[in-house]
Length: 97
Image (cartoon, rainbow, N blue to C red; front, side):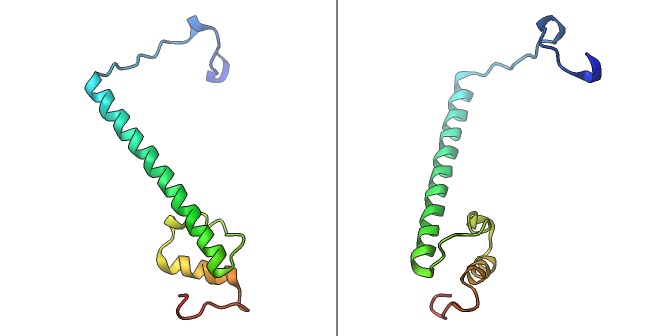
């Protein structure tokens, strides 16, 4: 088609072969995918728990985008983000750090 556009006309598109897998490989992939889904859910719950803790303990009502993904921050960046959100008028105490 013009400008390499795909056409919905089936006879103009080349069939794409899909590899067959055996039952053993399928079972391994399904188990690994299930574990990944479980880990992702646990990470989401842990992140929600952390944001709840920050709200209750450190009065951070609205987390920043960076704090919404805390696993992407190292400890120094995490503390810096918490300090920034609390502002200069509410600095973190030594025990809170």
